[in-house]
Amino acid sequence: MGCTMTEEQQQAQEARHALQEAIDRRDNGGESGQGDLAVRTR
Image (tube, rainbow, N blue to C red; front, side):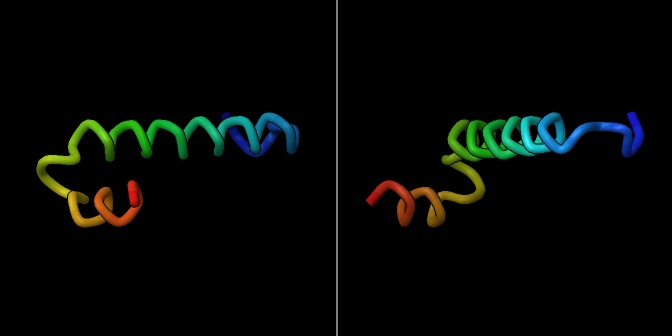
């Protein structure tokens, strides 16, 4: 789990994190990030 990942693996992990963040934001759209979501969907 250190810095022994290849660049490709690192990019894949970052993409997964970004995706998870987007999903979390969509799921909690009612509480936080609602203004955010409204701006994004237009």
